[in-house]
Each structure stands twice: as structure tokens, then as C-alpha cells.
Amino acid sequence: MSFKETINNKEIFLTDGGLETTLIYQHGIELPHFAAFDLVGKPKYTELLADYYRGYLELAKKHQRGFILESATWRANPEWAYKLGYSKGELEEVNRLAIQQLKEIKTVYDHQLDNIYISGCIGPRKDGYDVGEKMTIEQAQGYHQFQIRVLRDAGVDLITALTVNYIEEGLGMTLAAKELQIPVVISFTVELDGKLPGGSTLREAITQIDHLSESYPAYYMINCAHPTHFLDELNPEAEWSKRIKGIRSNASCKSHEELDESEELDRGDVKEFADWHLQLLERLPEVKVFGGCCGTDENHIEAICQTVH
Image 1 (spheres, one colour):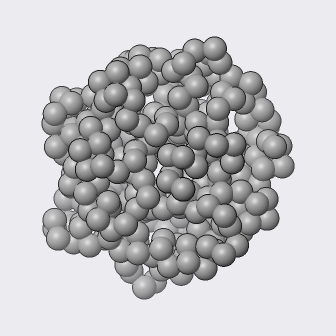
Image 2 (cartoon, rainbow, N blue to C red; image 1 turned 45 degrees about the horizontal axis):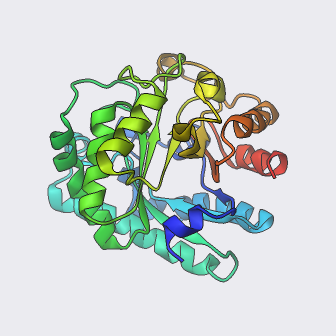
């Protein structure tokens, strides 16, 4: 069964939490430019990354849920790679290697879980919280096509674009994936007012991308924001709300600016975090994918599993 067919049935999927914040705050690893891909392929960190994913897969096995393995390639696009001194060839290789490592982990759990999918994770050209200079739709499509092609050729089941913060880039990502004939998920981040950093509402972003791509995204998600930031923006009766099938919330209810300035990890209240997902399900009954973002770890996802049935 294809990914699109599976995600449209009643099965619940889990995914991981906040990879970067886990590495920085729980393992004391420096991540220049918040780029976890810089650890991929370095023997010192190979087992650490594998253990990170295995912890979440064990949760999926315990609760008998499907799982989406999200690659550590959110920052592995040309602009961020250039800042870290990667050549184009080295960037291609690190994207491929990240997927190869996930395939090896998946092999161990294939007989223990019914559905495991490997997602090639991509992120914005600029910062996730700060739009910076906007690209046109065509520029965004051309820019992201490179990484999407490498991930597709490496054998991913889908592409997931996390922390999308303005419409043109999200649409460009979508059209690049469509041209390359690989399923794509578009995940938006929002500010305290429930709007994308680029100023659009979730309704505007979803309806425009669907309209201009012939509803190509498999579904939409919201990530890197606390449920209190976007709950009131959701309308369970609206068709655009029904297109949101994944939630990867931040543990903290702080703003993006406050999180950027924080020197300590804000894990929030784990039980309260899970309880918010019950309210989200009242507004988003179509949600099938549960994970976390900044500040979350296995404890948060475990709490969601115990709270949401």
C-alpha cells in the first residue's frame, strides 16, 4: 500500500520529537546553525543518532502504531551547507547517507511494526522563525529541487517540509516534489497569533497551495509552535482544516523569539502538553501523525500515546 493510501485510513502514526534540542540539551552537542545533518557520517555520532530513532520506534512498537522515520536533513540544503563548509558533492553524500542509515534502522523493525515510512526532511532556505528575503514560487521550486531529488533517489517514501513560514516557499517545495513525482507533506510554523511568520493565516496558506498545486500535498502539518498558538485558528467544519493530518508541537508556549534567546531547555509540563492534544483532536479530527518539535523527547510522545487513543 502506498504512503498516500495508508495515511488516509484510520491508522495512527508516530514520529520523533525535537532532534536538535535533544542533541544540544540532553547530550551536550554543539550544533552550529542548528544543523543536525553535520553529525551524519561521523563515527562518533552514528550510534547516538541510531539510539535516538530506536527509542521512538520502541514506543511505536509498545503502542502498536505506525512510524514515520524523519531524516536529520532539515538544514541539509545548499545555503546552510555553504555556511558549514560543505561542497555540493559532500552535501549530496550527507543526504544520501542520512537515508541509508534510516534504512538500516528500519530493517530491524520491519517485522515488528506494520507500517514504517522513511521521510526525507527538508527545511526553509532561511531561518525557520525569520522569513528574511522571500523567494518567488519559481525560485523556491528551483532551490529545493536539488535536495528533494537527492532524497528521492536515495529511496525515501515521502518528503516532509518542516517549519515552512511563508506561502511561496511552501508552494515551491510542493511543485518541486510534484515534478519529481514524490509524495510531499508541508508543515507550517506559526507565531503567537496563529499566523505564519510571513503573515498568512493557515487557511490562506493551505487553500492557496492546494489551489495552485491541484492539492498535491499528501497532507499538511503544524510544527514548532505550542498548541495554544494555533488552536483558535482551526475550524473543524472547514475543508482546509481537514487537510491538517499531523501535529509536531513545541513543548514550550514561549514565542519563537523567546526560545531563540533561551539558554536553558523549556520542556514544559509533559502531562499538560499531552492534554492539549485532546483539544486539538476536537478541532482536527483528521490528525493521524503525532510527534513533537523543540523541547520534546520520548516522554512527551509517550504521554501523547497514553492520552490520545
